[in-house]
Length: 244
Image (cartoon, rainbow, N blue to C red; front, side, top):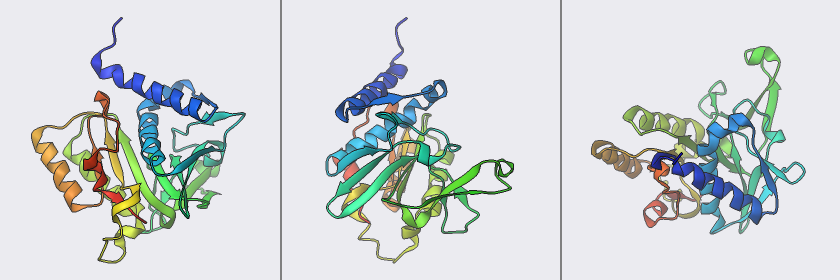
């Protein structure tokens, strides 16, 4: 059976996973349920490819040489792999599915698909009686350690999806509420601004909304990933890089 063009992005994700594993001389493992998370894994590799152009990357927390992707918010981050990055005197980590405890209120906690945090950020796990009846630990990292939180949606864009990303932006990034002059955030820094990765393409009116949001906030909204546009180094993207 011939694959439909809309499914070809899956092949690109598989190639990215295999290339990553080969480059760092390791294997990768996935469970059946992780097949549905292929889009998120593809976004992770688009992000690591972005950082690889300016940073030194090193996979960490491998198990017997195997890179373990975390594709559910229920996992213990200590049991899964992540990527450590170094540029100059800055050290940080690229992780999947780490819950963020917001600076807005400690009871505001949510799990972005990907986060970039400072190296050694304390991911605290404790038993909360209101979470899984206290049987499993509730893992969180403080938003003060979050450099950028990213979200992946393998769907077509629509206004409510785009606006919901603003809520995550505000809740996850305490630097957003910092000094009025944010010129140190947007520029030629080492980091990609908080980014919403979307599989589908947008209509004309939604494209205008995307452009308006990117002009108004330090964010990227990347559309059309199902068509294979995984390159984050396009010059149009660089205007929204942040430097923290």
